[in-house]
Amino acid sequence: MADKAPAELPENVPQHIAIIMDGNGRWAQSRGLPRLAGHRAGTENLRRIIKACVEFGVKYLTIYAFSTENWGRPEDEVSGLMGIFDEVFERELAELDKQGVQLHHIGRLENLRDSLREKMLAGIEKTKNNDRLVLNVAFNYGGRDEVIHAVQQLVKDGVDPDEITEELLSGYMYTKGVPDPDLVIRTSGEQRISNFLIWQSAYSEWIFPETFWPDFGREELLAAIQDYGRRERRYGLVLES
Image (tube, rainbow, N blue to C red; front, top):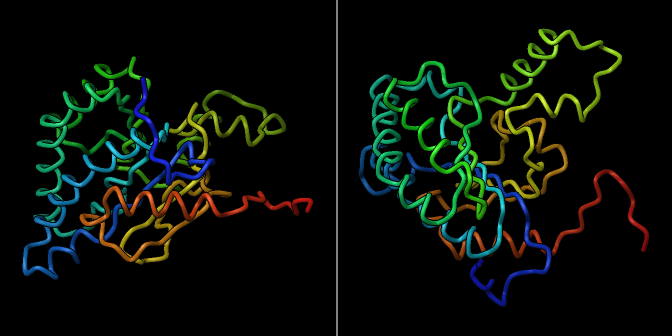
């Protein structure tokens, strides 16, 4: 049975929240720490956000963990990130399963170290029957790459161009079967989408809190949900008064 939601939640809690977890490096630098310390703090913070999403009744959470462009970062940072992710999957999987989280991966599994890829696949298998929260981990993911991949699959399947619709193309995306995000949050105050869910977020509400990701906790998430609750979603239409 789901936890009772706090009274301060709006009636229309977003079903699907997506987060660009930005600001780890600047968080670390502001404390005189190496950038990897910020990334480690960011992965630790994810535990709090997952717990809060379960508490608030959010059904889908998509996190931007590592983009296709991130491979261009300094080699020692990329290697360090891979090591952190490797550790996190091994350490957190049992807790995710205990909380009823169903783990999904969106993106390409190529280029990942074997141990990380195997742990990710094992986690997906282990949690496949959980239904409290679906956690989509966008790892080695890029929005444009996703669209290209979907079109490639359409061509391979021999789909007639005249039969291609938004619904059909959506079924070829990595997020097949998952509703589009209602709310996208990018922490740290930067106001860019950075190639994240560019197909799925066409009509999402966006929020850009100034807080760096490692400090973005339960209360900050609640504030974002409350902000969302005050908005009127129009999907390009004019609503009747």
